Image 1 (cartoon, helix red, strand yellow):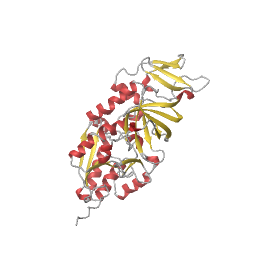
Image 2 (tube, rainbow, N blue to C red):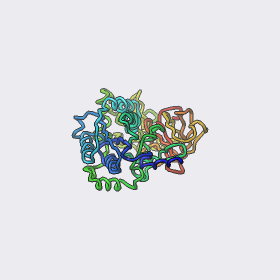
Image 3 (cartoon, rainbow, N blue to C red):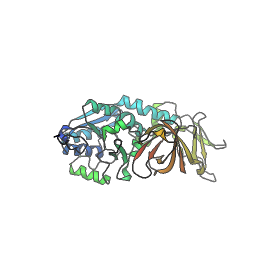
Image 4 (cartoon, helix red, strand yellow):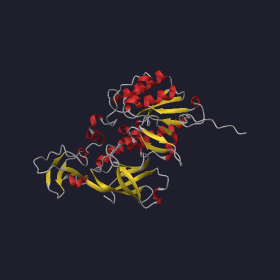
Length: 382
């Protein structure tokens, strides 16, 4: 008579927690610290790993950003208090090549990049995930607010239970292979208050630590200063013109502007408010116009990561919901595949301020599942 299979533990493995090794990606904040502490309390073989992503000396005094020097110290303290090993890995070169350089070049090209997505895609869920496998881990856990649920065709990616904390926009490029290995223990929690309550219950020093706000390598949100440092001479002056080419003013560099921007244009005294509607990096012109010109219905998308059950190109179109900015709600749209990795997205209701360099994330309109997404660019649909 065959033996009954061993019951699955909370991470989905048919073995005891103490026989299940979990690498926890620890940023030093409250979220990943709670994940590590909770798994340790549950009896798992926990290994904490923190990435040093940029200059450690400059980071020591910087607060409010992911993976800064003080955060590395906090992650180490949590590991010591909870009694599991902790490693700091120097990923500066990888991070600079995979994330920072593209960030600078995207701005120089008139786009508005989202480096946190590239960091997840190219560093945390790639190189760090490979490191976790090298450590003989069964899986890697993070403090992201997103859910991994079993489905008929394998694990699925779903929005967090707390919509205000949902990080699906930043994780759309998670592949099926990565999803097999990843775990997100916080995605089901009802609120951030619940996470902090767990941190207090575990006695963690980071229980009241503020959330990170800035992009880690952009102090005080001054993108232009970082780009000028990375690409000397990038901030060349030019003209601010209307859509008919009339010169309305001057600027100190296209890198200081983003699509949809209204404030800080320095062209007051006009009869109607004007917004940045286009950035022309070849002529160094900032093109402004009325708000109506910001409305976009058709969006070209490439580098698509598809998480649906049927092949992406198996249908001529997919009626889905999409987000074109992390802070905006999902809107009804039709996605028309052009290839496995490229599509035209038609919005049912036009959106304002759609910008190249941002992500367009696909959602099941009737549920919480993330079906992938891609990157907005200046293509044939622009």
